[in-house]
Length: 104
Image 1 (cartoon, rainbow, N blue to C red):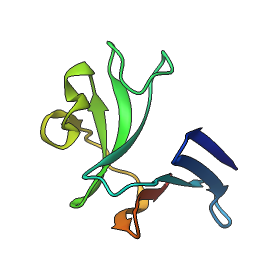
Image 2: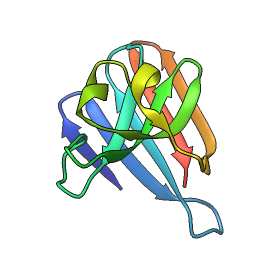
Image 3: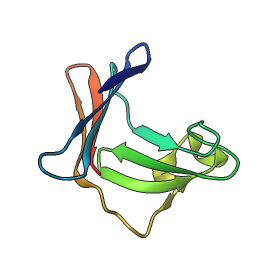
C-alpha cells in the first residue's frame, strides 16, 4: 500500500516475499540529514510517554525510543533500543530525495 503523509512525504509498505514481514519505505522529496518514522499510543510521532521510532542517518538505521527533547537531533539524544531487529535497513540521499527502507 501507499499513503502520502503530507505533500512530498510518501509511506509505502509491501509484504516481504514468503514471510510474515513487511517492507516499509519512507521517502521525502528533499535531501536531509536524518529521516524518522515513529508511532505512539497518541498517534503522534513524539509524545510525552515516549515513542518507538526508526531513525535513519548517514551512519544507518536504528530503532530508538524518543521523547519530546529528541525532536532536533535524535541521533545524539534518543535512546537506542536493546533489540535491533530490522532487516535490509537502509538510509539513502540521492536525486533530491531522502529514503529510509527496512523489513520488519
